Image (cartoon, rainbow, N blue to C red; front, top):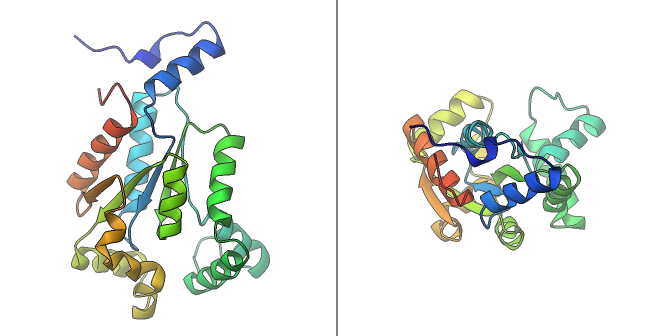
Length: 214
């Protein structure tokens, strides 16, 4: 016998629908994935969003990035090719913007969650300890990803052939050599393979929803 998804019922009013959604979603108001370059954050985020949409179609979920607005500014102001990230330009621009307000990108993501009425935003590029603290305070589920170094370097070579050793060892990447940073997350998950991504998706959904994974 197939178990009915409680959100698949017909709601008579928007208020009733919103109440049901609030009852299904647990204590977390979003997800932030943390890990170094090519640890599989974006791949896991895509899989997670697909599963949420499939299981709970009435719940709005969207993948977002702390760097989304940064990339838009790089395109608008510095004519960066939108189809090819200039990592060095982005790092310099991010550093300049953070010198004015450390939390500028975090504030943008949280503002979009509110203005666009996103029930579960999935942030796919968490890196800094400041971001851990801010999203923890905002009641997001923090997920740290662990990946074998050889696997990660192989992914970098395939996805970013122009990346140099300096890029790979930049401060935004090598901070994750400090395991204590990952241990501040609510979940620490191996993310080496497609099988890992499948299992990690289930674990995250189980944490997000009080009714569990159907």
